[in-house]
Image 1 (cartoon, each protein chain N blue to C red):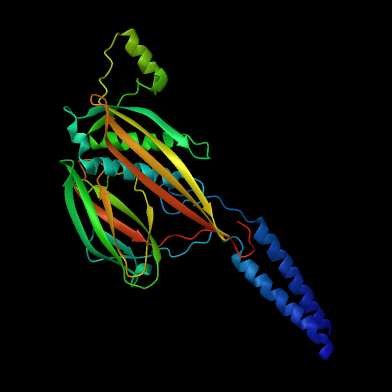
Image 2: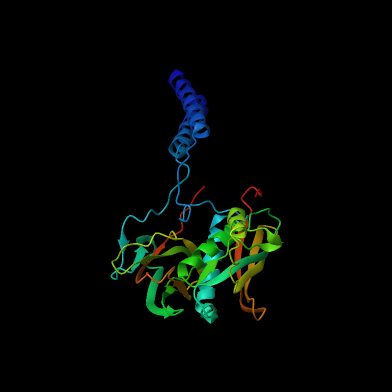
Length: 196
Length: 143
């Protein structure tokens, strides 16, 4: 009787210690930002920007439209890309990677002194160019687009789709010679206790 | 003797629960399916062993787009009857076999229904890329 009581008390003590250990542990570690161990959430996240930018560049390159420019690399300026999602995000996350990838192809270079509303990416370069009366680069392409969000929900599952639409306009003809759409869909299922 | 049974059961239950908690403690995030060994006859495909018997690379084609950029297409088949997900990434190498590190390798996730075939395509980031490697692995679980 005494032994069994002692045994149960020891068990309870061990349980309490284990609970303390479980709740007290926390670990922080580096993960590869482009690797498979990044956290997946229903919000738009770093993987989505990377995937959308990569696929858009791939589509642009595969279309063969970039060779239409008389001289390569052709100059591109980033126009308006509307964020029509519920999230307040910096569109540069998309355009930054996109521009870098396009530059690497050798088919496009980006003008950093020309921006929508006369707000350039590099104000200092613009000011210096004006001071030296340098010629503005002749923009051949402009990049514009929109990012949208679509939410649907059933009793147990919530789904969000992010729709990326981008177009490349040839300034001379004012025609969108390339346009594409990419969708990234994520689902979140209700847990056992009905809590998301 | 009968009166001691509840104490004994309580003790055993507590020890069992404590063991479970202790085993799970400090173990988050849980890591699964670390690909300990890559396999694949051709060096341009590396397949996670845990996907063996579920996902196979049926064919790999290469071409050129935009004059000088290497384009790769791989046909992937789910040989099982269940939907499965996998991560994949393309690595690019220059003519000396040196890995091109910019842009960094980006892992993407695809799902493939039972007995379905899909194509993975990629275009090299720049003209210096002369060779490639496709890496396929099971998604990593986190909690």
